[in-house]
Length: 94
Image (cartoon, rainbow, N blue to C red):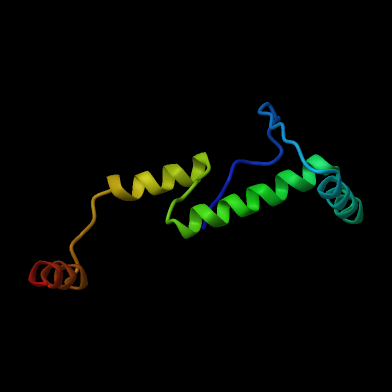
């Protein structure tokens, strides 16, 4: 699962985009229905879609804590179990 940074962090990056009058009106109406600002509406949907695309492509985006857990899993020594030995042998024999 993809995990992004905390949405409470300060916003310092900026996007500029142009839209047709019709698209702008649709987005404004949908944002109003959801009770959020247009920029929040667009950003939330764009991030959600981007995360889905990255997930489909097999990429992971981790926050700092998750990244540390992931790296530590590789750095820790692991005992070879019979299951692991069988998996290694199966891989070598295929």
